[in-house]
Length: 114
Image 1 (cartoon, rainbow, N blue to C red):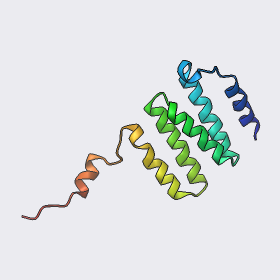
Image 2: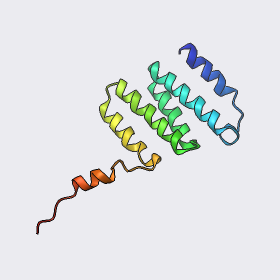
Image 3: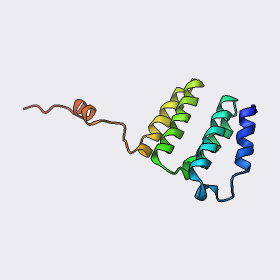
Image 4: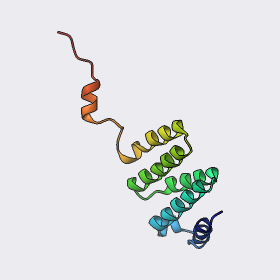
């Protein structure tokens, strides 16, 4: 592990037992930073576990979108295009989007013949 990973690991151990309820933003940030460090050092399984925990407790849609964005970035760096697309699509509902704009829906509707 890197020094940064060690710092975040120590920080996580010092969070209060009820940190998700008492300090959700701080706890979420620690999980995200530690997950990012895990991705960067090749500990993908650990990173995924941290992301899953953070998603389960995410305090906002923005936080969830950022967590999915981290997954997309990690998969892209690993050239795992299928996973990057899966995580990107998976994150859309958390942001309140289905991934299609009104303009794209108009373009894809078949024209009626008269």
